Image (cartoon, rainbow, N blue to C red; front, side):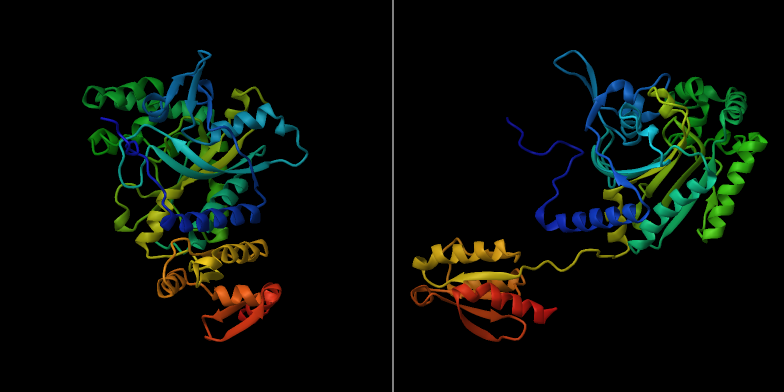
Length: 426
């Protein structure tokens, strides 16, 4: 039997839901512009090597990517995240040659991962993200975190916690990896299969395990702060100093390592503590990365960014009962009083649209009463009436819904009268 239902882990965004998406997209774009970020659009699929880099230990690379061979026998992957594609484009298009660094870029669009679908986690999901590439400065980290925090607060969200950590530089991280391997070596047989793989690839990722998070070895694991060299410690202190100066509250979470292997120094998450969010409470997350630009063949440059899940933001807004949409309405509904006047009604509707008015008319040959119900349902500001007599006299009747005033004007004066009405409404 043919299956005409949407695939598991996907969703239809219906017309009665799309307004909140539009409102969120517009809000995010305005905030990015305020911080002087410019939009970049990268392909929805890339060569697999863009995402699968060396001995990567992340679940995304090892278990969640949609990878296939195309007709040219090339391995292609649907993008599971945005940072890698932006960095590939940054290098390929030589944006590192700009005199104005860091290059501040933002993106918005669908990502694909093969995961177990649940509330706030879909196989096709949408992200908004920012990347500031070309400067390694703790206060740029602070600005990036401030942007993410300001976005969420600007939307009206209040049930938020900023979680912060550092992974240090290469030397600090290598020392910490060795400490973790020593620590987990005696209990490795008790940990899950993924943790055994992570132990060999990147033991930091063991700390992010959702299966063994309550194991005693997890709770007694060494902390990264004890293995930071002076340079890494100073960098993290200045990040905290900057957040304190901006009045952004945060907690230091020793086990926060993030889900991707390319992070260095600062990592952070902003989570909702609203009980309705359940286990999928992370709204926004990111950090600094030092090796990606060089990996793609560019110069040694550092980047800092974050991504937020748009579906999760909308769920969080619902949880806190915040509506960011404006009341949906139209400017004019053209009522056709006689079937013979339908062609004229369409012409009038088209004329209104060509002058910037949101207009609709009837195509179902409904009664006057039924059409007026559409005026109410669509919250039309004006009703324009035309029938045989109006056609013969080359006139239209205009009714303002707010004041119930009614006017009869020549059809050639329709737009002039509409402009007058809407100027008064303003």
